[in-house]
Structures are given as C-alpha cells and as structure tokens.
Length: 621
Image (cartoon, rainbow, N blue to C red; front, side, top):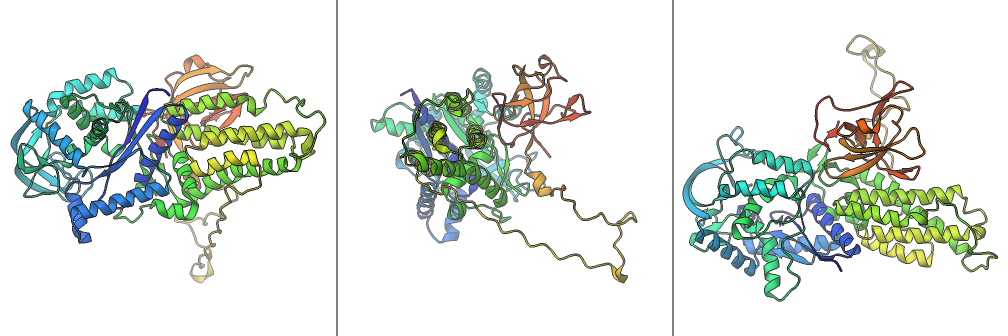
C-alpha cells in the first residue's frame, strides 16, 4: 500500500434534513475514496455533522425538544441517508463529541496564552441565520449579504482571534503551494479577498444570548463561535485516533471537499487558525459548485429542494450516485431536473452499459458449451478494445488524481460505446461461434469497466463483474419509460374568427417546425469557456488538432477539425467555447471529451471565443 490519503468533507449542519447538496458532496467524497483505494492508497474518509449554534437552538425549539435531542435525531437521519446511498465513511464525526470539546478548549487555551486572542467591545449588524456579524458596508438594504434576511444591530463584548497577524503567512502559503486551493478560479477568489487587509475574527458568543456551544475555557460567560468549533473537527478527529493508538498519523488532510459558498471560511479562517495553533493546513481544499434548478440555487423557502431518498426510492442508489457524478464537473455548477436525470440514465446505463451486457451474455450463452475447431487462433484487428485497457485505466487514474470523477466516468462510458460499435461492426450475432474470441474479450473488457465504475455504483458494478463470468441474462438497468406530456389544446381564435396578428401587424409565426428545439432542450447543451494550454497535430491527419483545454476544474482533451485554419503553435493561451457534456468519442485513436465551437465559410474555420477575457469554466448562456 502507498502512503495514507485522508479525505474530509465539510460537516453538514443539522438544522434540517439532508438535501441533494449534502448528498453530492458526501457521495463525491465516497467515490474519490473508493477510487483511491482501488488504485492502492490507504484511504481514510471523514464526514459528519456540525451540532452547535443558534440555528440548532431554533430548530430544536420548533420541534419541541432540547438541542441535544434534536442533534441526536438529525445525526441518525444523516447516517440513515448515507447508508441508503452506499456512503461508507471511516469516521462519522459529531461536534458534540466530548473529546472534540476538550480539544477545542485546549486550542483556545493555547491561542489565548500566546496572545492570539483578546477581548473587545464590538458593534455591528448581526445575522442570526448565518450567525455572523457584518459591517455597514456589507449590509444591503438592512439585510444580510449572504442569505438576504434582516439583520439586527448589536453592541457587545466578545473575544477575537488575531487573524490579521497571519495574512502575510497565508498569502505566502498559497503562493508556494499551488494545489492548496482548487479549482484555479476559487484560488483567485481567495486571493482577491486577501487584497484587502484581513480583519480579526470574532470567536465567541455571550452565554446569555447563546448557551448551546463549547464554553470558552478562560471565560465561561461565553461559548465558542460555531465556525471556530466546527473547523477544528477534521484535526481533532485525528488527535482522538492517535490517543486511542490508531495509526497512521493522518494530519494534514490530503483533500478537503467543500461547497463554494463556504470557501472564505475554509480557505482563510481555518488555515490561519491552524497556523496559529502550530499545525499545517490541509494539502488541498477543493470547492465544488452548486446544484441549480431553473437557473437558481435550491432553497427550502422556495420549495425546490431535492431530497436524496425520494430519488433513491424511484431510481435506486446507484443510479442516483451515477447521475450526480456524471452531470457535475467538480468546481462548476450543474442544473438538476428529473427529466435530465432520466435521459442520462437511459442513455448511459440502459442503452449503453446495460444493453451491451445483455447482448454479450446472450451471445456467450449460445456458444459457451460448444467445442469450436480452431478456437483461440482467431486473429483480431489491432483496434480490438481489450488492447486499450491499460490506457483506459491510466486515463481514469489521471482523472481521479485531478479529483475529476465525471471525466473518468465519461471515458469509461465512451469505451462502452466502442464495445457496442464493435458488436455492430463485426456482426457478432452472425455465427457467434466463429467469433468466440471477440465475445469473450468484450466480456473481459466489460468486467474491467465494471471494476473501474464500481466506486460510482458499488452495488450494480459488483454484480456486473460477477455476471461477466456467469453470463446469465439479467436486466441491470431497465429503461425508464416516460409518458409523453399531454398536448395543450389549441388557442381559441381571435374575435370575429380572424387570424391573430403579431404585435408588428403581421401574421403569427407558423407552428414549430420539426427541426426546432425548445429552450429546455437547448439548456441541456453545456457550453463553457476554456483556455488552450497545449495543441498538437494529430499524426496522419491533415484536419485534426489535439487540444488540451483548461476548464476551471481541471484539464480535458478535445480533438478539433481546425488544422487547416490554425497553426497549433499559435493556439496556446487562446480562449475557446466548447460543448462540455458531449458524449466522448475516439477519433483516430485519441479521445475527444467535447467539441470546440467554430464558424465556417466552407473552407476556413474561425474559433468562437468571448471578446474579452473570461475565467475558464464560465458557462455560456
């Protein structure tokens, strides 16, 4: 085994039940853990719940129970949901853990003794839902700039952490550790924040206003600010393990997964706290995007929250895990709809993966007991997919090292497409006995695909690996049939029976033509801005260039037919617009994960690009 790999997610706040945002981050952590284990790492995975603060008190009061009872109920609920989603953390951590409380108090004592904590009166605008103070310049029309809810003006004594003393160190750390904040767009966001002088951090709340928290060890009239408490759990868990004789030493964490909305807290507050206490920050903080519905963030108040177990009940845990991992590029936002979910399931799982196994199993079952003259001497072509398995595994491995499971999945499903094409090209159903080696090798290749997809779909792919040896007919992914939406009745004619006229005085446009698409169909095309970091000509082709595109959350390869219009040496650094969710294809032996947009006058191509510099990964609408 290689050295340890410690992955953590943000602790989920237990003021409400888990939703798709919680599920995505925790599934992403679980999937990456399973992949790193698959590739030989000694992996430890921590997730859990954040249980202190004002919002917990309010939620408990609404439920008619104590804060601790509320936390116990919600912690069990999160555990239940994670179990149903096949998420298996090594540690499910709770901040009400007595050992964690002691660890937090020990850190506070150390910081206080070395002069990193002081008391002062503070006056500012307080947001109860976010449990934080804002200055006059932050508040927008008397409301919190983060959640948009009303704030109240408070003046009170509190304790502060001298975070400003560590700003220079943090800037130097970010500069000397290029992988510390990912993707690059989030690092730039933090660097932009640090261009202004860094203030000190209020780390207490008066016990008279909030009793549900860890008491300050040097002043029990105050409790610890929930963020200071919660941010130390990833470290305290490792210290608790060490005290119990657990090896290896897990700190610093190798990967910390968070949502982009809490980037400042985790990439500024947390590392300065750790530095002051004498610890290194994690090696990489990766901020993923949001799941959007109808172009906006999910919100309980709007009523558009997707509950994970609702999807599991309808479609199964593996399908839910697969679509979440397939549809979102880590670091970027993604749009969720049940219609898109079903389309992805039917396309990738039912049509491609499930159908391929079904066809191969039937073919093998028809010949497996036959004695075939000359079996094993059949010579396959140089393009036979089984010869590409090592390259496939390496491509998947590299995608995972870049924390990009959706690219790994796209590569694997593209390979499945190749196997399906081979079945068609070689017409394996015609005299399958003479093509036994093709069928056998395809099953072997499919078994390897199942092994490489097992971190994403642990139940179904373990079964598929077994079935590729047994070859009994089985429907792994039954197609989801969608009832067509009823056609709305035609609009009534205008008064007098005359044809309606358009605002300009002309006739209404004719009914939609068969080649027209709806706005929902167009929205399925994920257009992104990327930057070319490398370009080369494809060997033995006068039309194709192989481009490496930086997309904000990593690097992807795209093969583009623009070689007659562009010298590859001139393309590095240029911005392009590309289709990010196009099904991968192999062109003359090279994988293409997308398509560059270009205009054409018949002979020349002209790359489509924004007229001004735009951050890589930006969505084109």
